[in-house]
Amino acid sequence: MAGDILVVAEHSDGAVKRPSLEALTCAAGLAGSLGGSVTALVAGPGAADAASACGAHGAAKVLTLDVDVADTNAWAAAVAGVATEASPALVLFSHTARGKDLAPRVAGKLDRPLASDCTELSVDGGAVVARRPVYAGKALVNVSASGTLLATLRPNAVPATENAAAGETSAADVKAPEKGLGAVLAEIVAAASEKIELTEAAVVVSGGRGLKEAANFNLVEDLAAALGGAVGASRAVVDAGWRPHTEQVGQTGKTVSPNLYIAIAISGAIQHLAGMRTSNYIVAINKDPEAPIFKVADYGIVGDAFEVVPRLTEAVKAAAAAG
Ligand SMILES: Cc1cc2nc3c(=O)[nH]c(=O)nc-3n(C[C@H](O)[C@H](O)[C@H](O)COP(=O)(O)OP(=O)(O)OC[C@H]3O[C@@H](n4cnc5c(N)ncnc54)[C@H](O)[C@@H]3O)c2cc1C
Image 1 (tube, rainbow, N blue to C red):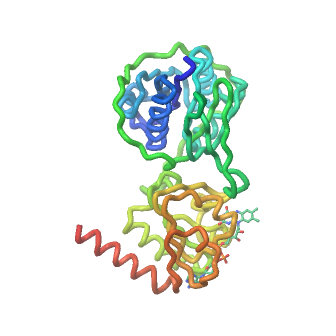
Image 2 (cartoon, rainbow, N blue to C red):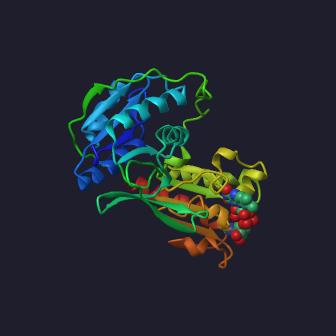
Image 3 (cartoon, helix red, strand yellow):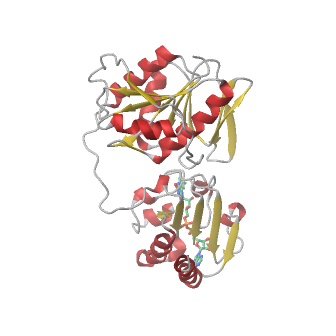
């Protein structure tokens, strides 16, 4: 139906990923304005177990797709099949690694426009309006379409809240998937440690070249651990081999949008800002009062990171201990 929304919900053995809960929450709000309802599409092992969380976050229906999620092309064909039948206002994905792989394929199959990495979705005049950053985050554009729009939602752009809906589960009639038309995911290698995924973290603490050498990143790690956050890095640091590329924040790294982003000894080059400027609160620690990072910071500390950061970490630990 014209006001309905399909949300492709990712899960791990039935546990719905937080970015998907955010997408469902966002969709529930939009569907309310459009007079439609939200249907969650889940696939892969444990899909049926994902239904209750999808329902709790606003899905009136949960369709399970009997498809091999390692074959993104087959998964995309199944999603496109459901979308063709449903003719929704919006097909919403999370801007995660899987979502970024899946959404353009579905858009291609449906021959419909895709607005990727959206930071906000709203309804105006009965149409979904997707807001997304362009020019490395220097400007924002609003995208809308007559007919079905596809969008990916940036993690942390919308808080996940419970919004109970029926969550009725049924199996989608999946058409025979196309074979041999694309790469197949062979294996997901779990990270060596229990690190928080950078793009999904509510707190990110990043370090830059001003930390002088790799060993000094313990300052960043300690503060991130005290705050229960993830560690990020500037490209200068990654290029120097101090940190892995998986931690790079910016135009050629990851885009993060946490509630709190702390930039330590990072100058704030435009390419770095492109990956973090939509964070809710930005705290910059830099000894140069003219550093460009202060232009986007909500709070700035002009000082030597080697003095400021250990004191900040101690203060965070003391506050946590005091409850
Ligand atoms: C095509 C392209 C893509 C790029 N993509 C990215 C990207 O994805 N991510 C990214 O980060 N960059 C990217 N860059 C690189 C970017 O332009 C900058 O070179 C880089 O971000 C600089 O990293 P930095 O801030 O750590 O280092 P610097 O620019 O060297 O800044 C170090 C900062 O530390 C401060 N400092 C020094 N000592 C201390 C101290 N003791 N205490 C406190 N502060 C101190 C200094 O005042 C300075 O501001 C890209 C560049 C290009 C051309």
